Length: 103
Image (cartoon, rainbow, N blue to C red):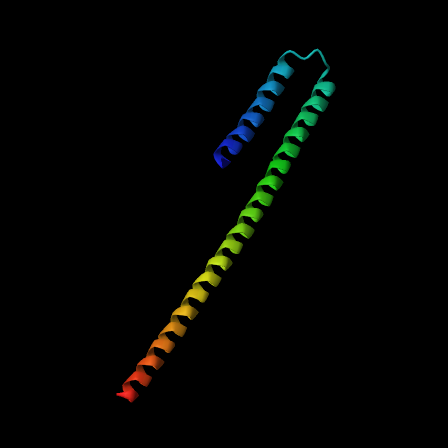
């Protein structure tokens, strides 16, 4: 999924570049007007990249939080299982001592 999003951003930037080049070639505007248009398009491209970067960072933070929660849950389950095993061992060994003393 991340490859798909990354490719989309690359194609977008490529499209902006091609559009700008075609616009320059066929522009009926003066040089200063063309520069203003190019600057506006470049700013749009920067804003798009900033937005996508922010979204990617937020998504990574969400995944990290989910990973931590899953890790903590598994850790707690393992701790409970180990404690239950210890308790069963203690009970079994204590029962074995009582049986041995009664013989």
